[in-house]
Length: 192
Image (cartoon, rainbow, N blue to C red; front, side):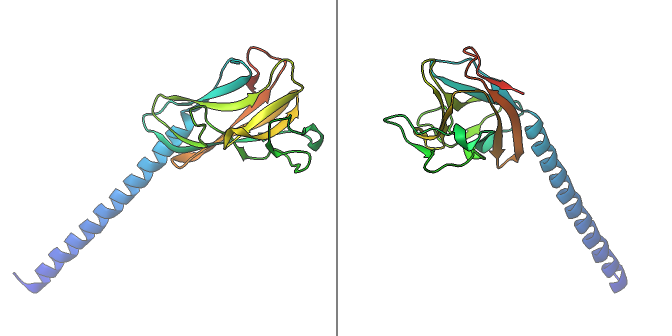
């Protein structure tokens, strides 16, 4: 076989290999982008009725792939004057002595021992703790990523607009606009 024919065959093989590699790379990028988009679109927020003093919601993964390392953040439209001193026997990260707005602060999941991060499998509705109050209290309590042992904040018992942000390494963050209404004894957390 002449050397020019051999060079021509090698060049064609190299071009074919590069084209195949490029096509594979583009296909993988498109599949990953599609999966991330579908995970985002199929992530849902389901309000739950109040059980005792606490109210949680369900975060639903309606897609065929799991969401791994899922964190939840809360932002509450509160004034600094809404922040209360924790009742006796309780402690909180945000208090009148260490006052700030509740701004993208982590929440805990409802499973023991109230971890800050969980995996949400396909078709699973994972419970997320949001708020605690009793009918005879003058406060509402928001948990922290540490669970209920260390509260995020105690706020005046009134309606608040808030945002729950769900973050996972598998898709972009998704926000849900909610209202916390302690006067609604049946369902104090609703989507806005």
